Length: 198
Image (cartoon, rainbow, N blue to C red):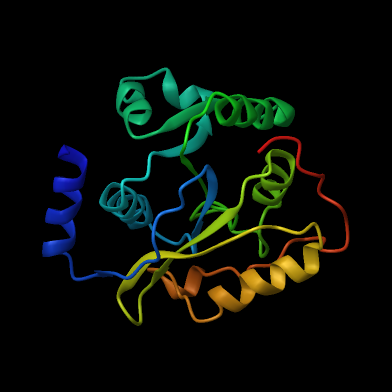
């Protein structure tokens, strides 16, 4: 497969080492964190193509109208209207029910240039409403390693789930450690929905 060949070549020449758990065998929310550099997208594709994961990622629908639209779609982009959050979840549920097996890549700590000081809760809401597990992807400059950590099932106990996530990312620095955001939701006391699809 061409993508796997590209990935193997990339890792063979990269200064970074792929250290990863096996790819999930069911649809999963694939967390990309800490998100601190444009290189994160390259590493994400390298990880996914090496492990044979069919990745999807959400992008503003306007990204898919220009000259780069075919490329964005080819590497898993899903155009979404962010003014309709319900539509995002419905689209993911539709794909899961259609039998697609994919990793939905989400960077909950925000874009590289728009750090909020906390994680966005969208990944948690989508996981709870679709019944998808969460796979913890990482990038770590001090060890020059990147890959996938454990795949976990969220329980609905937000604080406890986030404690597990924080424990995993505690020693993960990203490509630019100074831009790292602590894995913490603005509100970890509320409810973020229940699973409606598996």
